[in-house]
Image (cartoon, rainbow, N blue to C red; front, side, top):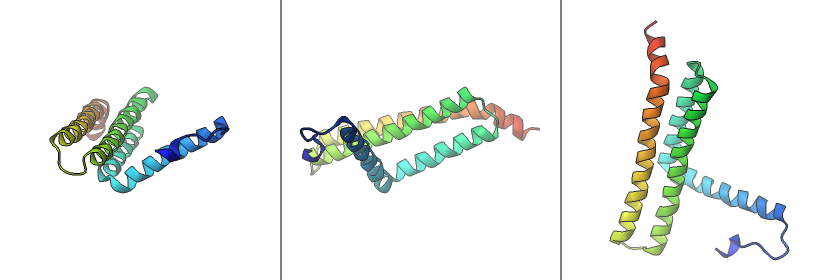
Length: 132
């Protein structure tokens, strides 16, 4: 995209600021348009809050945060791939559908993994809390 090319003589700090701005624009777009991203963020925050309330240690909390971040990153990559597929093939095309479906499957796999990790980390202390 022409607007993303650095201008000659642009300093490193200006380019760095612009790159952060573009990343923020992408995140903002995904937040506005992708319901699943908002749901995944809420579930990740809920898991982290539950982990804190249950007294998980720093390593366990870091694993929860990392797992939630993995799901959010997968959702952002999926959003980017869907936009590219729509650009390359505005009408229905079997290869665009395969690309979109495979990207969605990646998000589903990451989300499933996060559920398993969440159950492994949160399950035992939650059961202990509920049974005492």
